Length: 542
Image (cartoon, rainbow, N blue to C red):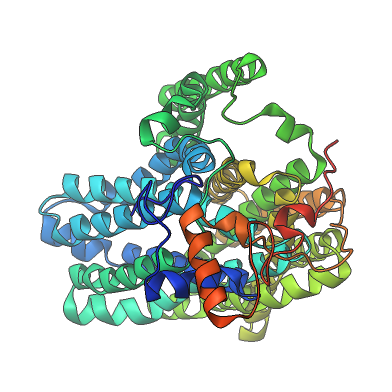
């Protein structure tokens, strides 16, 4: 599973150039003009395998509680624990991927996901189950940041928005597919079977990733685990982990504890103090975990703000919708769940098209239009009367999916295009972490606004107020998106095949090419080479 880290020979350090048929096929694959797309499909296969059960497992919690002799409220930690684990692990693992190699960490992350699935499927108690899901949060941090970095690495800056469109398709469509396929599995075969069916998908994704993904870490990066760990900013890591974990836990538990309750206030204070400590430390750290100059970079700052605020509105509205339809309009759980799939379904279908459109019209316009469409959907939810028509309901849901599907690829790509290849891992982790904070904040703030408004205007009005908060967040996203700079598109950049190979793989390619007598490839050249993903962009740090 370990790769060369960018310096050693393949498959083991110090070995001669491989001459097996497998090695030659992989070398040819690396030099293919379509190689960047093969990387994208390999990464998306892994993303699908780990997120397909993300939503549907919540449906199984009553059944799980009965079998494990616990309560549903206790099992809510199966959602909270991975969230907190992700917050702790994401920055560290993002940085580790940059210095050790994204491919290596991605493969270990998929292996960890498989272990989490086995532990979940065999969990004898609620405690073991919660621990297994926490492990799932750690692997999510590993595979999430590194998979995004791998995709961004092989696509040039002008094409990254297209790749992020396909990324969004699987990110939003995987849970929809999981509900469609997983709900009958849970009903007829039980919740444990759901995870046993997931395991073969991960095995296939792991094999594909091993065959396809490029090797290599940052130039001069350490090639051992201990060496990579010694490069990390551990004081900054601890400070950021405490700040994020305390903040997320306060947001997650505040509706049940109370926003002014001592535990909530204490966690919020701890989060604030740790965040200040983190900023002060990063200013003087020789190798900072998250360099503060990232936030002086226009596209990164406004890109992540756009992502956080669109997800605030989208996920807050997503969470409230079934409660609204069941408690106010008398929908059954099944009907509310079925209707609500219109939102992520449109998200997944629109995102790839929006990625290609943004490559033409620019990321700024796409981010603004997507956020404005999302804001419109939030306003439509406030227009639900005594008995809204199905046309109005589906229109509001569809516009939510369309809006975030348009905005997400552009916001993600514009943030990434400001950074060097050796920073993509920690940059991706920072994006995902800030987006996750937006998700949690949106759910908890909009739920709290709705719950606190029961006595003022009645239950329907309380939902209207919550959706107005979502509309305000989407307007902030539109304003933020207006400050994003479009990526210059002088021409299609091409991935540097030589940079993706270890020395042994380059030798294998030369042997294969010499055998065919077709061309000559060295590091940085060849049919998949050219200017590379790095040279297709200009450094526009502000």
